[in-house]
Length: 335
Image 1 (tube, rainbow, N blue to C red):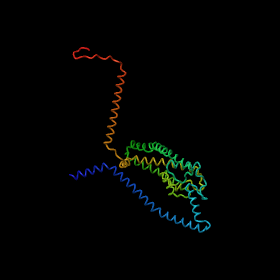
Image 2: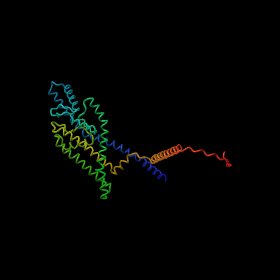
Image 3: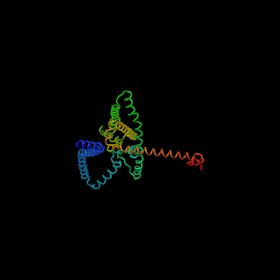
Image 4: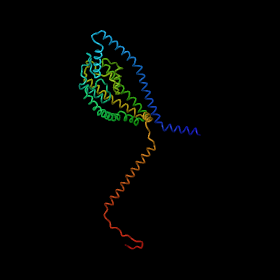
């Protein structure tokens, strides 16, 4: 008997704290996934970094030996200045792009990457005024962009997701859950095809030193707003129709970001994912809800009583004066 009571109490305790346990497992899983990514990246990329460092040391040593008139300190000073300029998007190589980084189309592309929080980092403000304006522009523009994207996605998803699912559910009698899952999968496949696979093939053809994997990598990094900046289109030597190319990339990033948000919202509306998300949310206690309801009812009742009392007082004030009735004694005589 005691064991059954203890077991039932433990079950009740676990059920009450289920959201907290799920949240703790979520935090633990995220930290483990973070550590897993660090281990994989370190094991894969560290050998390539070591090989590159060794190659650069050999090249530097050979260059100093072949040019005895140039000291190592002078060479390092020159390289430091070149790398600093390269970080700002300025290159001294003869085969580098001869176009300016801050013409209108390049500035438009930069503004789109700032507002979408992609931020490739290949071009950054050089002056203090530009940096200050970038801060103010981002503080206003990023919430404005979120508002704009939310409004656009809210209107698109009605015609792209909710109405088609409801049509197949009412017109053909299919299960709404099954129709929603199939629709989400089809929409995701179309989005991947139209905004990842096809653009990757186009970029691999337009960019001389990009293969399909690198182009697909750029599309994913851009539309997921990661924006590492290691691959930026339109920066090659003698790029044809560079201004038009930059405008097209800006439109592609904006439309692709909208499409990604529509797909994410479509998957988030699935009932299975809603149930899964609720496992990690804080649940309101029934007692708190009842207290809020009682307080709301008391406030409503008190407000109604106050209104009624005020109406009675107004009526008394507005009534004409009436002569007071004479008082009557117990024996029926009038005083």
